[in-house]
Image 1: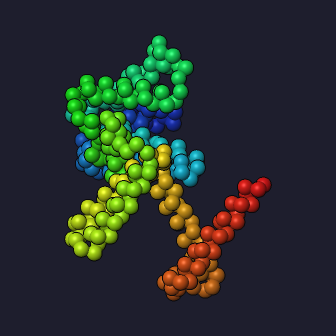
Image 2: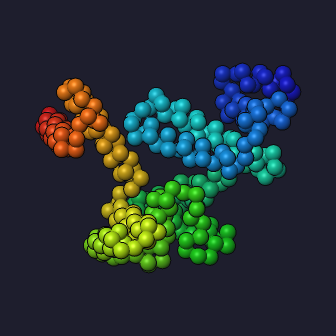
Length: 282
């Protein structure tokens, strides 16, 4: 592409994906690009990719649809950034990324793009999906049931995926009561570690408890990351209301004490409960 054509594309407000790809190429140009972008590699950009994915999830969680377009653009840019670095090494380019995903989606949806019947339940489609993915892993010579669960996933999400993989080969509790019993057992072991063992032992037992909590989420069909994000948002909302009530008394939290703040917390919860009751009755 000539410099003039490149400039025209970069400045075209309707240039779409080709425009974004060309902008990324120019940013990485060794002679005329941005020094910061030129210095980056896969490992330095990966944390930003993870961060942008969470910002997409955050916008969805808040129903911030005006923000979602920008957050999806930020995440898309991360894919373009990685693809440009790969292209420079002769590994693959953004078209290869898109084609790989297209091939995968077509292969994994024979009931849409092939000759299989669409007359099946969502559960059956999920089982078929897992069967296809297992065949793909076999083609990659992934022999163990846990092979291919990415190490870079957030720990809670990776725990969930490891448990799902183990469950496919029969390593799973038959019902949720066994998981609840295990939570009690692990809680006792954590208390014992706190009283008698080292900090490393405490961390180990705490991890065991979190792992079983992730398993409980799986058995109860709860997405643990989403559940924790929801609780984080609830805690933030309630604590801000406690701060507002303290401010009405001419106080800041550091000028209060636990008893007062705990009483205000209960007051906030009661007000939320009353509002929900009114909303449910209207």
